[in-house]
Length: 200
Image (cartoon, rainbow, N blue to C red; front, top):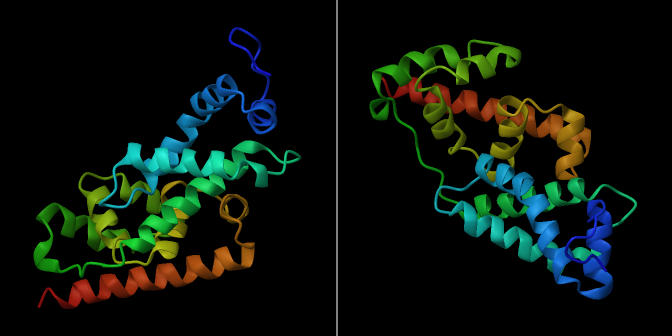
């Protein structure tokens, strides 16, 4: 068992101490060490109607309820990342309403950003999304996508993850990641085209 003041070891040791003995000190240490990773994922993929602390708490409840399914041969951080992303994805799916985005709803600053946002290649898209007013605008465009499409675009364009990293985090195949990213970009372009139509 991991006792207070002992060297807590790596995350797998803590997980084993909780699974094998119900060691509460190990559980507290596990939560403390995994919290920064979990809350970072939650903040990047938080549905509009969810509170980040509530969602993080839900992830930890799932973590401890399903820890017996974790394969100790793999890094615990990877398993927790996948669990966190899937929980966020489930919440995003629950928010099934995808609002229509209209040009009339945009600020002047946002329309200027929008006119340039998809004219750039994927490598410089992150630079565009860092301009003033663009984060909110890009978020509004993302909100028009379904949960899986929104997640793949966020991971690829905003977090600058590689296809291999996304596949590892989500459990999707590399081919599926590429197909989803391609389709999601097309949907964003269609949303942008619809937005352009609403100008007139």
